[in-house]
Image 1: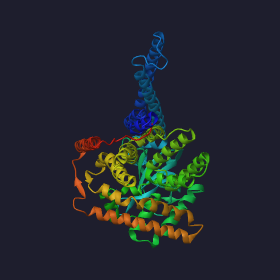
Image 2: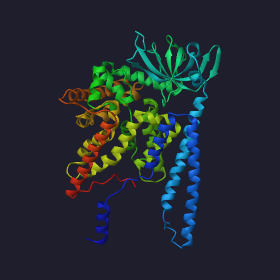
Image 3: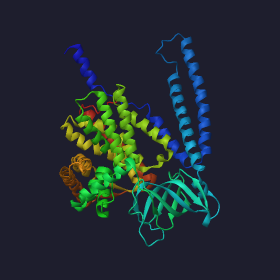
Image 4: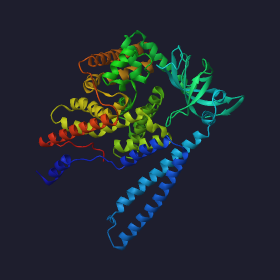
Length: 532
């Protein structure tokens, strides 16, 4: 073998490493905002001041280290001892400062809002009985607890514009959670007015207050512009699904646009037991399907055209499914990746994910307490590290497609399992099996549903055909969910709290290490994701 051929062989077999430079800052940002979001602005500004002082001191030390290097006549690329460590510390301390300033500003602005002032004012009764006028920010969802009422109630998120108390009206920008009845005909983006009693929200909640509605809301103007078009498109999809089976009628809108309103309680329970609920919570997987399909169709076009059209498709999809936590994370990650394409840089998904986490937490520090965002981020991190490593290792024994079909859901399941224990202290034994069986149907169901949405006003026959195709795939997913959820030992009880989480983490770590050692003994390299 020639020297060049040997060099190429060694390069292919050499382990490649994940770019982890931004991960510590993302983890630190998450921990910091989690603490600060449950406290007042004062602590955030104190933290920012401390971070600024530390940054200044470390910057001075870095300058001294650089001068010392030059004084010793070292080469330009050489590092004076501890210089690189100090430089990394400067970056971390600056990150702490900026994140604390951002959190402090958000906390201070919310503390000065009239809604927050009213809910924290002394006294009961008339002090907190107010009239709220605002925009429906999230569609109503039924709640089991009826809050002392015999009538079924819903939970909605209201973006307040005006709050009236004792004849005085103030402008507001607060977001409150409303518990009440009479929201069946309300649409996202619709203006509403209601009487309510304000109660303090729990510490760390992203909404400023909890409002218990005193009667039914007054529905005002409907949403206009893009939101009106989106609402019409989503309703049209529900209409197209009316001829499908009960399971498919619920799952197609859920998988396509995240509308879970038609899913029956029995199917919902089966989806939870089989670890398939993520399919109806539109997230990174759905964004990857849509954006990947658009990119494949544009493979012949110049890069600039690909980036522009793919960006428009991404924006349209986010508008259609509504900007939930996981969708925002996936969309922002896609945006960072598109920017990397424009800049001519290779894809670095873990770095992009870190940038997105930091950006989301700076925009909204209360997202640090969101289970949805946490699951989405952890699942993505698991796929781009463990998943891609396992695909590379297993594809030496089985076809690459089969390896990916098993490795992707398995890695996501391993990464998310400790967090899921906080929601339900039980392990879905057949979760990976269910995800592997359902995986082939998910892209077809997603694209079929989107085809029905896009064609409903253009070609009704084709739209109905797309809905039927999506319905067939959704029915298969329902059969998988119901079948695996009724198998013996489908849900294994597990210890609650930190003990259960710690035990599971140790078991998973031992399994990961054992798999890696086995592959090394088989003279196969389990390589981390090729990101650098």
